[in-house]
Every structure is written in C-alpha cells, then in structure tokens.
Image 1 (cartoon, rainbow, N blue to C red):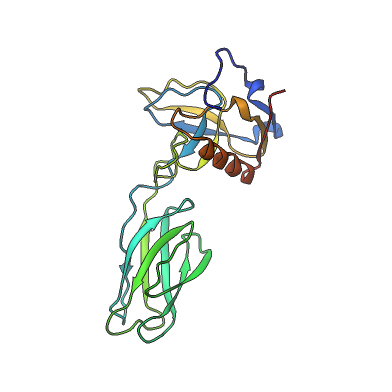
Image 2 (cartoon, helix red, strand yellow):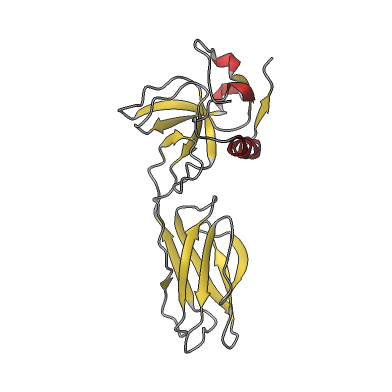
Length: 219
C-alpha cells in the first residue's frame, strides 16, 4: 500500500461515500511534496513542540509542573490541572482538556501519562492546596494537511483523510479535497510514504475506522 499505479481512477480508491459530498472536506495542502490521489493525509493541528512546563496560577503550594509532552490526541487550547485533594507531600489534581473534557486524575510525584498530555507534578514547600492550578497552553497549528507522517509531533502523525485527486504541491500550497469521514476505500490503493511501515499503516487504518472510513480489498 505504498505505490499507486499510473492512471488510477477515483473509483479504484473510493468505493462509497455519503450523499451530497458529506464525506468530503476542502483542505489546504501544505507545500513540500507532490501528492497522488489516494494519499493518506495528516493534519497540522498544533504548533510543535508544546511547552515543556506548566504555568502556575496564584498557588499556595510551591511545587512545579515539568516534563510536559504531547500525546496523539493533544488539542490546541489550554489544558488545566487543578488540585482537588490536599495530601501532605503529595496531592491529587483534576485534569481537563481544552474542550472541558475530564481526563484521569493526576497524582503529585507520579508521572502522568495519557493520549492527550503527559507531565509530572512535583511537590514543594508549602504543599499544594485545593484550588491550586497549572495550565499548559498548546498553540493551534495551521490546519493544513500533509502526507501522513508517523513520528511527527504536530498532528500529522494521525491519519486524517484520503486525497481524491493528484496535487502538485512540491513548491506551492494548494486547496484540495479529501475524504475525511463515513466512506469505503480500497486499502491496496491507498498511498503512503516510502518510510511508513506496515505497523504504521495498520495504525492509520484503525484511525480511519474510528472516523467511519472503512477499507476493503480491491474488487
């Protein structure tokens, strides 16, 4: 699933989509590489790297938030960590995403790992009090798409959609159209970069299923 034959037609890649082009989205393809129809795309959703430390509010506790890194689902906006339980030499913090969704609680002095954000809260003197906060602000990316790029940290490491026409974007950004939801595509005719491994392709396919993009064999 890395090479596309010359003269491919759209119906050899896309087998079904919602009526009235509802499976499609106009995208801006960032300059840097010419892409073929069927190319699997990733979307630049955040500015990378993100801050490595959390910003303390007007806290009573003198601890810090360090070792901040992103996960595959990191969103642009402000992540908020709020102390909910005071514990001598420790503490428990609620963690909220920029959309207000609640993630698992974080415990002071224990490395926090999630698919959104990772960090470590470090105790200080005095201890954290209920209501103490840290914020991590993640800047929004351009929203442009590029070739699906496993190992990237700007969002393009997550499969976003499938390009439906060739795009000569080697030296200039162009608008294009991608299938991004609820559709059926031919797995063997999807186009991935030469460095993308079989395992990374499998990950992209799983991500597509979550978006309603299902794959089938050539027929």
